[in-house]
Length: 123
Image 1: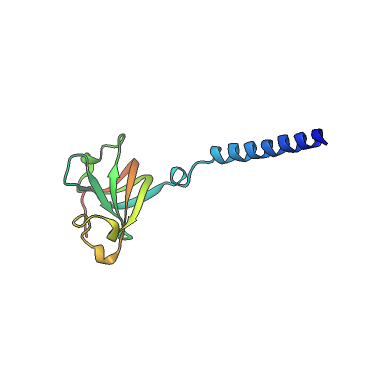
Image 2: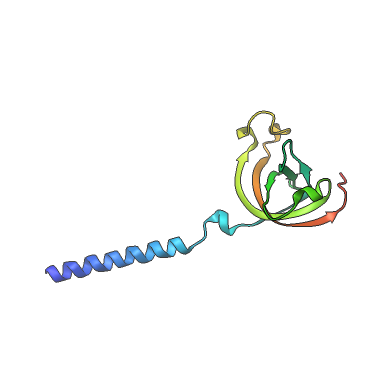
């Protein structure tokens, strides 16, 4: 009786450890997703702040430690990277969103690649 109970406990522990190991090996949703946005690259109010509004109307704050965004301000570009957050426009602080009434989605994109589409932005 005691041996059966110990075997059952050991098997239950092995199942739990295996499930935890598989779950830990999976990348989180944010890590596995990449996003490409095409639009006019704009300079922010402070140094190293950049943004882009895609064709779908969504605005993104851009950050990068590997891509030189400042060299492409005013260009139409396609940036690719990992979204780090998204929030409804009404959740942002007042003054940070020009079109809050449209409830556009804002996010932060950690840019890993930039491709220039055009040397200037046309509306």
